[in-house]
Image 1 (tube, helix red, strand yellow):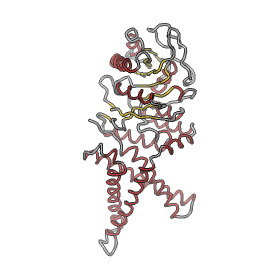
Image 2 (cartoon, one colour; image 1 turned 60 degrees about the vertical axis):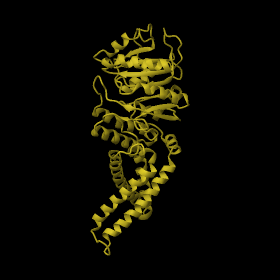
Image 3 (cartoon, rainbow, N blue to C red; image 1 turned 45 degrees about the vertical axis):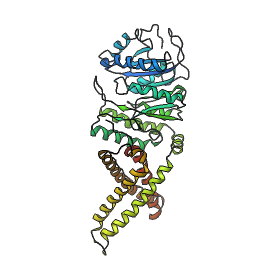
Image 4 (cartoon, helix red, strand yellow; image 1 turned 30 degrees about the horizontal axis):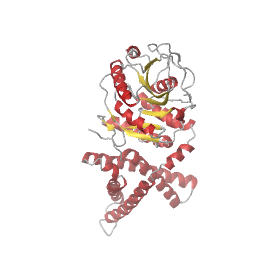
Length: 415
């Protein structure tokens, strides 16, 4: 980890991916202890890096002058991104550059950068300007107010994505649903667990052995760190102006691998406790009351359509229509009451339509879950069809509420 001059590359740490509780001693660098270290992982970002460093320096010079450092960690880019970054160190004294030749991967690059960082607060930002640098001041403010971690989120007030395709949105939502199923104690703590733009106190992850897979370093930090208070700040994810996107199917496979490995290797008891402590019980009770009204609507419509004394339609057709009307009833009440604080900020017709479609899909999945739980409980645990049905209804209700909370009623659309 020795650095003999500001113009020389930072040596790449070796060994376990652990962060020390004290900053490392680096030769040639005075004032070892600083407030903030920001890692910029790069690969083929030659056209972006100068602008990124310039903008970040301007912002941090205004908010915490002289009390920060920027560390570019480049995975030996063939376009020599590391060399361009190194040439900037004379003009930007807060900049340090690491060139990794034996390792690859965004997550491990961030951790290697944190290992040589001198800050009491550690952060990460993309090197392609898709993460708006001006949000850094808001994240720093949340840390100053006592948060252990501050996450830039696309799914809270002020956040969104600028121009994602329907397929990319679908993959992002699907990945989050999968994460909520496999690892609810981690993904349930933040609205945007896929975010790669955040900062964390060094003391909250010191000593933990991190073992990331792929790009989603936030999951690893929350899952293995000692993080109590998490704050979120909205940001708009912008399309890159230079260079090429590195999102491929491989990243989704690595994400699933990471979820499973975290699930198997960490104790979730404490995480579940934190999740329960932060559970929005008032909103859940409103959701439950709306669900009860849906049951009444379903029963009434089913009677009107299928009873021999009324229309006498076939039972299956009547049940499908009754179920959809009940879902529509539940959506209207949830939109106007349960999640009114979110829906009031998204009142255009296409936004409501998107929420309704998501709500329908999630309720359909909840119905499938209901049937599965009913059969499992009845056949293997409690051989009483009515008790088993109550258990299945409870599980499906929690599923419907939690996934709708995370996916249907959240801020995502921005102009």
